[in-house]
Image 1 (cartoon, one colour):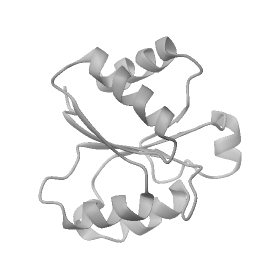
Image 2 (cartoon, rainbow, N blue to C red):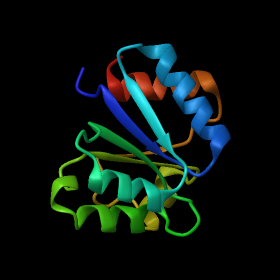
Image 3 (tube, one colour):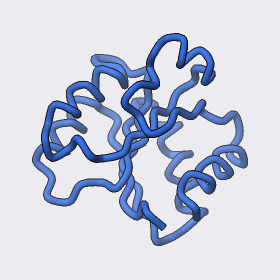
Image 4 (cartoon, one colour):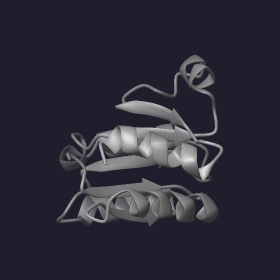
Length: 127
């Protein structure tokens, strides 16, 4: 398994709780930390000694959206190589049309059910 240390950046606390519950149900060896404030998340990443193996990043957030966050993150040398999966309510086709899938490893539409979320995460994480 490639990803043991995951960071979720999502301003919706309910979505965050469900995401972490889904991760925990898949594999207890995966550590998932959530940050609801993208500005704080970026500052924490810049000063962190232990960087995440993978970031799930919500697109629709106040203050800065996922693409703006990603642009700021990619300007920081030590953060450039962290894979990012953009995670949002837009369909994949809409996301591509809006050009919000650039510079990410993958784009996923937020699943409608817990079971669907677990399946998507299992596929991505190989858990």
